[in-house]
Image (cartoon, rainbow, N blue to C red; front, side, top):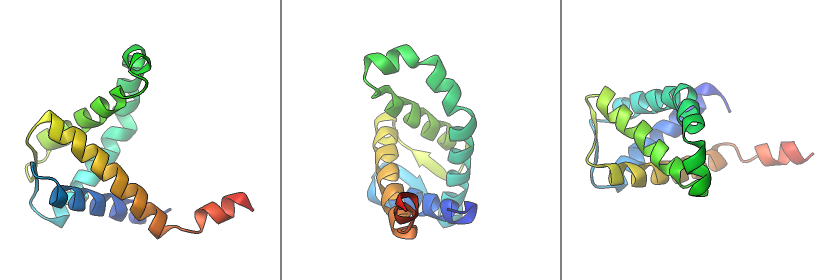
Length: 120
């Protein structure tokens, strides 16, 4: 999947997630694009460091601590962007789950032939 398509899918997921969940506010779709870009950047560079530092607690919680790391990434995006607001930590956890599910569904719709190519 190309970069532009992935960015569009992530932006739509952020936009719909903010629409569905009370407590997450966006100024509009351009802000959703910025949130998707920033979250992609933070997931690429900061998330691996956080995962490495929290391996023991992640193992003890059977991976559920990764939800906390996702919420931290969302709260950092909230802090960095003025048009994106998340009310609380728990809202950030719910938002991360919703955005992940919406992204998964939209990627399946946008690229249905990828599974067929892998199996052949």
